[in-house]
Length: 80
Ligand SMILES: [Zn+2]
Image (cartoon, rainbow, N blue to C red; front, side):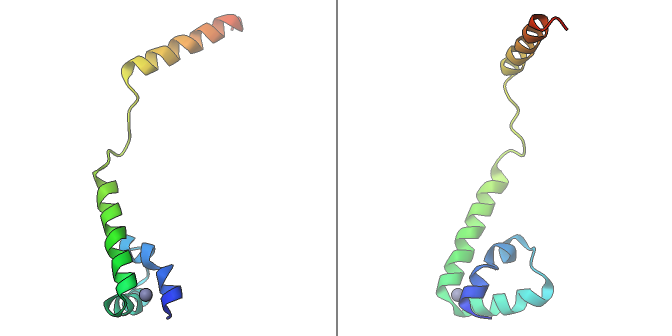
């Protein structure tokens, strides 16, 4: 596989989504190619940062109560 092809596989390589068959030529290329090695390092850093983020961000309680009162106000206007 060429550098151009492998570059597009690096995300999947880092996230582990690459098939076993595809992993070894990609790994060999990364070992030999500084550009791809650097790309893998930065992808890993991005992934590590993403893993530190909370899985879901709950809106603050007051946002919910505002939303709820806006909905009930709307329902009143619509006479439901
Ligand atoms: Zn490369």
